[in-house]
Amino acid sequence: MSGGLVGWIDLERDLTDRADVVRAMTDTMCDRGPDGGAVHITRHAALGHRRRTAPGVGEGRQPALFATRCSPSPDEGTVVLVYDGAIYNLAAVRRSLGLPPVATDIDVLLHAYLTHGADFAGRLVGAFAMAIWDGRDRRLLLARDHLGLKPLYYHPYPGGILFASLPRGIMANPLFTPRLDRSLMTIALQPRLTLAGETPLVGLHEVKPAHVITYTPDHGPVSRAYWRLASEPHEHTPAETAERVRELLHDAVAGQLPASGPCGAMLSGGVDSTSVAALAARLLPHALDTYCVEFDSDKAHFAPTELRPDVDAPYAAAAAEHMGSRHTTLTATMADLLDVIPATRRARDLPGWGQFDASMYLLFRRMRQDTTVALSGEAADEFFGGYPYLFKPELIRRDTFPWLGDGPKLADFLVPELARDGDEKARYAQLLGEVPRLPGEAGPDARMREVLYLGMAGPLAVVLDRKERMSAAQGLQVRLPFCDHRLVQYVWNVPWSMKCAGGLKSLLKDAMAGLLPPATLTRQKSAYPHVQNPAHDQALVREATWIVNASESPLRAMFDAPRLNDLLKRIGANELRAQLPGGASAAQLLVQLVELNAWVREYRVSVS
Image (cartoon, rainbow, N blue to C red; front, top):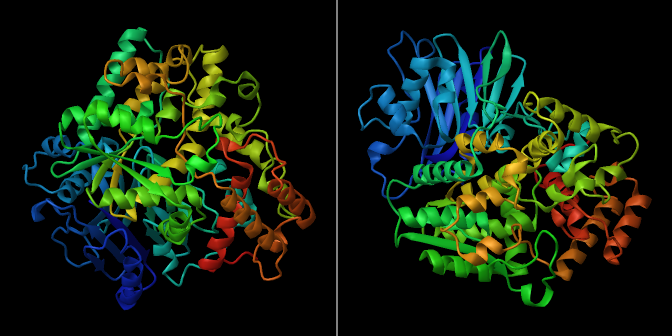
């Protein structure tokens, strides 16, 4: 059940007197849950939920917004649960608890908690964010799925805590004032460097993937991991490994198909999306719709790059014909993209990605006309080794993030009092310290384990966040079979020397042999498309120039204007030849600056 949740716990205030604030917090989730909602308010605990109902699902399958046990008062002995997401192993959990087949997902989750306590989250497979207020011991639990597919934010303060699916739910409470954390300008200007749990707002945190946060008035929020990657020797032969990967991916796809109604799939014609769509097409013969996006300016302006050597549309159409899906290609114009960028910002509540968000928003809007559930091949690159930089020894050997490239960074142009020398290196060192090591592993396999872990941190979170926020804003549930944590765990332990012995994602290609068309198997890696349009690039330069120089610009005082103006002139004259993260054009370096400025102004974020 998709939607949005909010909550407020405070043992010093009577929240029944603040019902209007709780409802205002809940109403901020209306776009994620337009089909109704409710709040549960007691003296010291308030939880709200907005729901989006899937067509064809009986009312008995709808989650209740809260559940209670017999108690002497509304505050004592009451357990209240709200959640957003989908549990893919619901039937297995239901059976393990001895519940009847008619038990709803919310009933199953509640009984799982009552039976197993905080450990219940580790028994789930799915994409979820949930909050449980246990009035028996005045304890709040916030839980998030293994890979962080569903969002959940929180703001602790003396005497209480606020939480919500998106920051706006917390911003709607007068106890929180949005203020830019000037010590975290590094991640505000390069979100791929964000560590799990961080946000660019003072006092706003995100529940880490695979973590449960326990909050009590006496101890505050305490975060505990319920799952971590584990490094173990890999005993299977290459043939056995490919067979096991196919089994795990097949099971993940099968488990994520909707119980009823139509199903869609994103299809680029590359290995990742075609693998997922092809498996779904076999499980849903003649019932799968596939979708691709292209730009009307591609014929005039598309130029091959290392990460985007060609356009997706012809490959996607050929793959759809091969698997027998009904296929739609959405052609987006520059005007289309610019028109929805404000909506993409509202879908995030945090600085966005401009046209990268907009094209996905448009694609999901088109898909939502036909279905409420869709599959995506996202994240295979991070797990199976799908990026060109992974095969460049000069980048792999660097004592920093190999995906950063060699171009300028916006953080390098901050004024001295905001510059944090060594911050990037400190983040790199922290992540290296978290890598699950395999005793005795050395050489290229050991280094590539580090490199893949680095890619599974901030860069993966960026693409997963974009997919969730843009789809949820449309009422579309996009499910990601490659993010099934059991598949991730297995692939993590396949040595690099086996995983990519034949080049990018050779293991995945071997696993899907016989199912994919030859053009897909031989196609070069091509990342999610972005528009190449000189007019758009120049617009970014103009906007960035205003931000740096205009007296009314809220960000002006943060940057060394002469140095940044020089960079903008070089970008505008097409004189910057550096390699940038993701293979983006030089002007795309400015997206984070432009979007940060728009966010600060729209959300009235204090920058002082």
